[in-house]
Image (cartoon, rainbow, N blue to C red):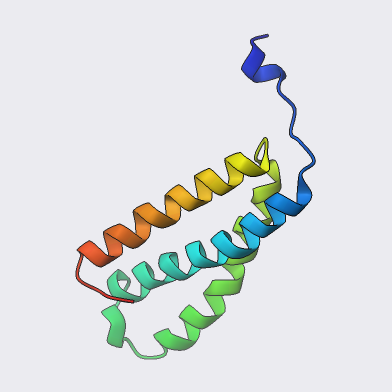
Length: 98
């Protein structure tokens, strides 16, 4: 086995919990924003606001639970932070300010 395969997941639960809680929520918001604007019917679709509202906790808790599979808290922060920066930048470039 290589050195990368032998690395174990570090039990840095506080750092991973904070990353999943803060950056995971921000990531859930931007993912739902993409669905709200570009999903079926666009932003003005009937009853879409309620659906979007209920999707946020589902997406957030999914991201939060998978955060513990990162090898370290640093990796969780860097990965989720990078995803947030990328997706928010893309959303703003497409012309929809949050």
